[in-house]
Image (tube, rainbow, N blue to C red; front, side, top):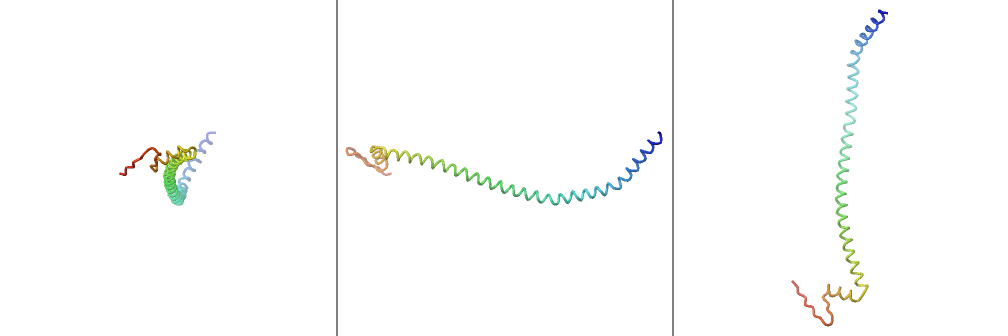
Length: 119
């Protein structure tokens, strides 16, 4: 039984001695593979980053135009409400028409005089 353990360490030593000769070759192969992989992946990653950056710029520009159009839309909605109120006053009664005419065109009632001052 004592001879069996002695033979096992000798086998492991011989394997260790054989492996150092193979390790530099496998290391060179691994280095080559890694360098080739990096050589192919690096340009792809850079081009993808450039595309993403350009898309981000386009998105920011579109957000700016979207915000401008939203502001314009809200202004138009306010103007639309103003015109709707004017239409209601003009169609509901004759008094509304007279108020509107006095306000914009300076028309007067039969018993009043309006003096317009131009500055």
